[in-house]
Image (cartoon, rainbow over all chains, first blue to last red; front, side, top):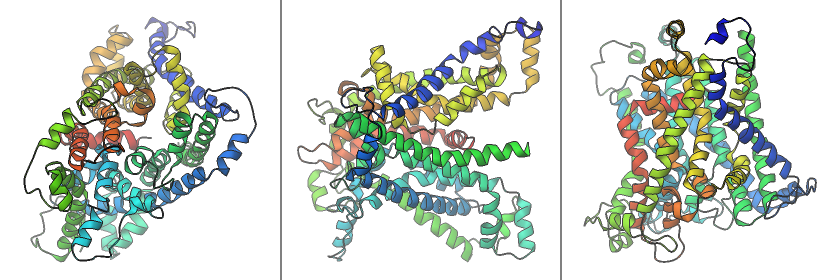
Length: 300
Length: 297
């Protein structure tokens, strides 16, 4: 304590307790987050197989990566899953939040029901939906049992639509969170806005679309970043629902990385693929960080 | 038509069955049923016998309720060579979650406290790295951590996994605590300083007792997060110490043998039970937890 009052003590010993307390944070940030990332990026330029080696081969791993069918399918799946999951979870989440915001009864009950899937593990979510979408027992069997003999709905067993089967489960798990964030955003909107727009005779949907949503921009941006960084990491859900199948139809980048590193002992491929994931995330985050922090600084 | 939405504290409109109400409650109820459906399907499937499953559809309620699938899922279902059911995975998960939650919260709360109240030069840089790091895909850091753990002799052990959870819980928790401690009135802090209290004294005697709510939020966030983890469990542990989620996936997605859907669903429910209980008990605190964890990024 004396150090801060005594004019000019040595910089190193200033706040020494605080520095000691921050050692775990400093180690995590520098060794794991920065060190680990740099290590992986560097090793993505090597021909590491079973063990990491510093045998540089330039862009070979990346060439092989982008020549690999499994990776291309992974990227395509991630893209479809990502775009649709962004759109649907934002729309559904917002609509649910807007409905809950109508001063309704049982708001807590509805909110609890919409959010409980979020508390569950992706593995649990994936397995339940694997069961519901099972063509022999699930939705398809039930509809056929009702007399619709030719009804076909077997997303998890059909290469062309398997990613939509995963999307259904992903949305079921994730929309509750979006709804919560949107609800918080809606509650932050001043009641006077609503009064003013009512006085002016603006229909409700127009008020939402042209006044409320633009006002909620920060909430949307935050939600977008959270969903997006979750999408890039999608792994457990796919493992539980389809293990990447049928064939390689539902592979995703995160699974490609895991398979390369721990199953096929092809570390270099794993490093290159994870570096590509990193680049994707940086492309998503950098503009956001710029928008958020850059703007704030201008205002402040 | 928008009357009730703008009159925050006004009386409830009399006409309960207005067209607007029917649309709102109708939509919400239909959506709610959709969200509840999987839980319902899990429960009814887990209470049926296999013959009934093969005959009926997954939505029909069980004609004869049996708890055998639950017993089997817990005690005798097989993964690979051992047939101890999920009980082994459950206890592994407990042994992973309890220390991970305690250690990560202790470290992060002290970190957050140091960042909020005892700022030193350079701390912000590390904090920024930490927060940005939270968005980096885990896949980028997985292998370097394998090497670090291997060097420390902790690869494949529960201790190693606890360390990993502590590391990856750090960004969000530190942010949570830093923001909370920063909102504590500065006068309180200054008064304690004048009375001669130091770094740890202020932390233990003033900050800790004052911040019980945020600790509860952090505990909820960590219990559900760590219990539900799959990736770290599968990467950093060996079959003997697999957490429940990994074991569950192995039981359900094992390729040999007849698929016992009732046992699988009982196992799935058992694995989801802990986070569900935490969720239903903590109620609004859970919402506050995820909001705090998410919004303040």
